[in-house]
Image 1 (cartoon, rainbow, N blue to C red):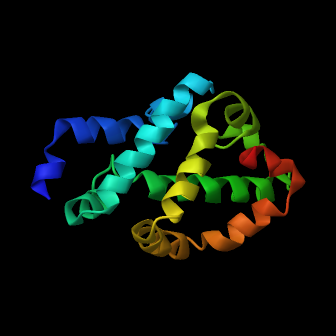
Image 2: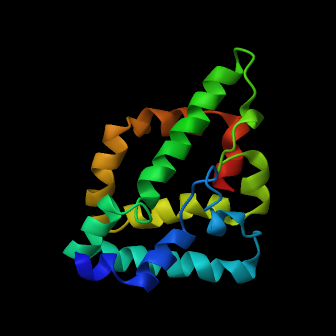
Length: 157
């Protein structure tokens, strides 16, 4: 565990994929969406696949602030759904900094977080890793809500 935690390259690489806009740490999400930037998505898929296949990697993904990418993604999805519900009662969704808003999903690599989540869910160890995260936050109903709203089609384009 200490080997991965003290490995500066892994820490910085995982930090690049953080999705926290409030701290200004969403470097991957801030990249403009271009075909040439898809290499960063491929790198993320390989990195997280590797981390999911070793015990040290799983511990890192569950404990280090830079490794909590998937937990933060789930929080962002829940924020989006809650924003949708609150917006109907005169609340502005644009007042919060969201990774998954229309502009960022259209113009930046933020939309590829959904692709990363989908890719990780195809790996048996990835599904096992994601299961407690998705059930703890009760995200499945949120995803079903998003899937049923045409105004959120931009997430899957």
